[in-house]
Amino acid sequence: MEATIRTAPAAHSQWQEQLDRLRQIASYDPETQTWHARLGALDLAGVEMLQALFDAARVHGTEVRLTPVAVPAYWDGPFFTRSPDVAALLEAQTDRGRPLGQLPLA
Image (cartoon, rainbow, N blue to C red; front, side, top):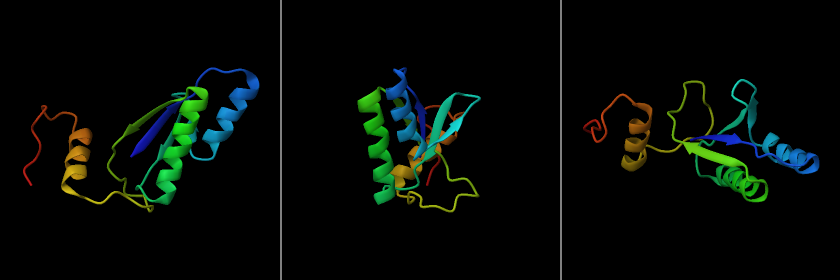
């Protein structure tokens, strides 16, 4: 999964605290002015990343969006297994041209 994070406006000290939280788990994209993080699996590291994102949202009002994405070829980290439900969701999210309700037959 990919997390896209938009920072919330804040006073200088709170702004720095928000950025310090995000720098530990995400990378900044200056073109879109958003932060991005990849969550490979719901293992301990993945749960800790989600907790940090939710903490930033709760404390600072940071906007966090989670989007299922296919694993890129270069990814060497953990990944979600292809259980039927997760696989169907990923295929539906990555194949945006397919009409709603038309998933490939397994």
